[in-house]
Image (cartoon, rainbow, N blue to C red; front, side, top):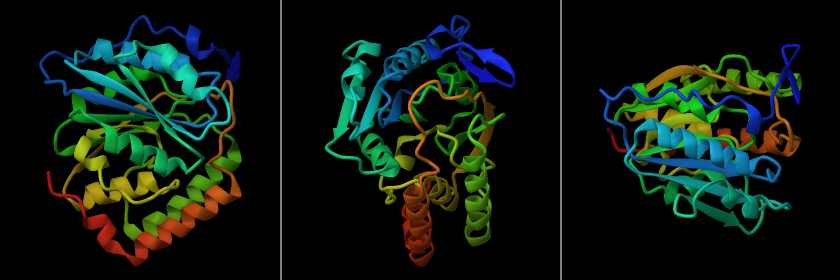
Length: 262
């Protein structure tokens, strides 16, 4: 069990997922590629894939796929990923070594075969059922970005995030309140042709979409404490790489103007 706001939070597999909120049938639901980047998540990945498949089945979409991108894990992440869903629904894309968060997302985005991409981290901190909050807002000219209503991360990671995005706003202007929230739904074209291999990938995606005329729509989602594994977002090497890539985006603004208008 984990602790959240002084109360026990059930493990991912035992949280109540029976009341997954259905998407209103008045809206046309796109076909959906779920992209789940994973690095050493063997302890939770099968549960995450299982809950992701349940949310997609409840969404009313006519077709979906789940792409787990294993970014060079040293554990059994790749093997366990296929245990959470039917073989026809789940594809595991493996990197030979750890190439970075952005590289994992780019692999998944480029392989996506459906109309829309649903990005969700595979660490078990999100509720896949919250897809139903994003779907009613989806459109071919929109990026629907979740924001963590109450972020369950260590203080140092929250401080790093605040400092980094104060620089982003100063250099590029505003986008959304929680850029790095890994719970987004957007047209597949928005995820293709990205450049970043590190943590700046979410910043690049949103800035490029904004500059090309896509609407950025926000919705609050749940966020839970990790119950296994280790976050890498506060690693000094990850932070240094993020600032380096941010500087490259500043030096070469053409990277942020390469997406066709919707």
